Image 1 (cartoon, helix red, strand yellow):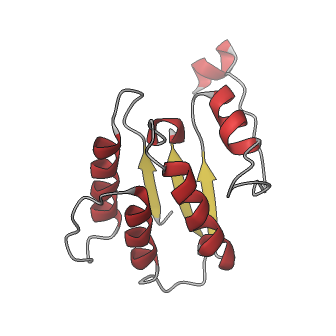
Image 2 (image 1 turned 120 degrees about the vertical axis):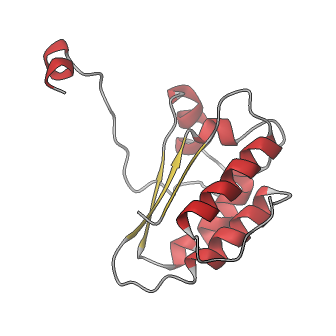
Image 3 (image 1 turned 60 degrees about the vertical axis):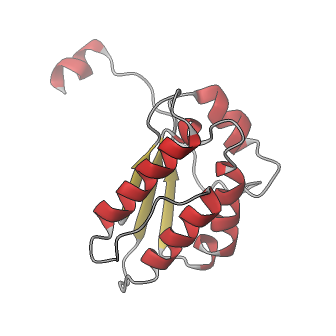
Length: 140
């Protein structure tokens, strides 16, 4: 994995989410200059792109975005910026594997699976996760 971030919670505002994203950039790319908190998701993805461009590997590079419904706060523009980032950068390089997930299944289906904007028809694989049985829970 080359990058992991997660939304804070459903009550987090855009500035909080952007501050957390900047913190994750600092964690995953400590050799980069200290970055300021981006003013928008577009700016955040430009910073991430610049950091990813510093990597030189032939292996798959996994970017994991967890709790993405929390990142897409009211009028944040996260999904639009993420769609642009995907279409203009990530999809051009087959080394990238992008994983998005969220605990709100209905939101993920409506906003990601059936997206009619920049993420339309971009899903390569869907994975349905079922709850553990009692035995599986005990084993785990």
